[in-house]
Every structure is written in C-alpha cells, then in structure tokens.
Amino acid sequence: MRKGLSLSLLVLIAACASRLPKEAIELYDIGKPDGWMEIEADRDGRIIEIEADIELSQVPKVVMDAAKAALPGGTVTGAEKEIIGKKHAYEVKMTKGSVGYEFVFTPDGTLIESEKEIGRADAPDGVVDAGLAAVPGSEFRSVEVVERYGVSTYHVKSTKNGGRYKMVVTPDGKVIRAVREAKAEIEIPLK
Image (cartoon, rainbow, N blue to C red; front, side, top):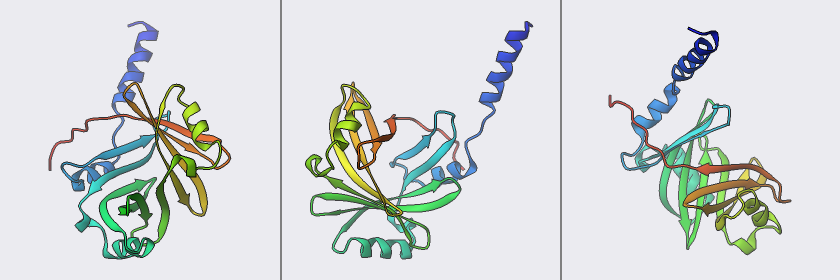
C-alpha cells in the first residue's frame, strides 16, 4: 500500500469507529415511537444536545407542576427529554391562547430556559433581518424570544429551497449560531 492510501484508510476506520453516546441510545429507547429525535452537533462533530419527544407520563410530577406554575392557565401539548452535555433536562411544550411556549427544567423542577413565540414586529429592530441575512434568500417563518439564565436571545426561523433554518440572534442583531434543521432517519436495533 502507498503511504497516503494507508493514512486515508486509517482516518476512515477511525471515523467509522466513533460511537453514538450511550445516553442517546437510552433516549431513543424511551422516545415516542411517532415522535422526533434531534441531535445538535458542532462542525467538529461534538454533540451539543440530544432530545426526543416523550410521553407526558414520563415527565416527573415536580417538572409538570413547575411548568403549570410558569404559565398559569396554559395547556400542556407535549414534552421532550433532553441531554445537554452530560446533564438531563425536560422540556414541556405549552400553549396559551394561540401562543406557543416551551420551558426547559432540570429533573428537580428548576427552570433553565423558556421560549415564547412572538410576532415579527415584536422582535427588537434588526433581529429578524440579521437572522435572515445569515441565510441569504431565505424566507421568514417565525421568531421566538428565548430566556436562559436571565439572558435573552432570539430564534429566527426561515426556509430556503425546502430547507429549514434556525438562527440564534442577540437583541442587538448579532448572529451567534446558524443551523440547518435536517430531516434524518435513526435506526437502532430494538432491545
């Protein structure tokens, strides 16, 4: 074998030898059979967050109580279990009137993050335009205000050529993350 070819082969073997974290397999196993599973990664392949739709019965009572207290009069519409780094969390999806909300809690019911759908005109000046500029030619879909540990950002969502995009934008219009949300198929043998 030529030296260059053997090095390429070693790189290919190393890439194929990587493994999905055990926590992702466990999350897959408890996820709703007809639900979504999302894996967010950096460009270097490091997994940032994994989440899966779960049945409401799998959400701890303390988390469900905290969600209902966070949005009195709201209606629970769904839930996810999340793995952020090595930490586990629960996301409770709710509506109140025609507005959608998402609340992320630690397993003990401590609020980590909230998201609220807002109208385009309700976002600070420049936020939506900055988000859309990150994917030139994309069309506005929606915007959410996100509160995490007292810091506000905005998720500007758009579409282009059938693709779905999400940009994380600061209140002053700085894009700190832009991602394409790809459909994927995950196949893992059943237990």
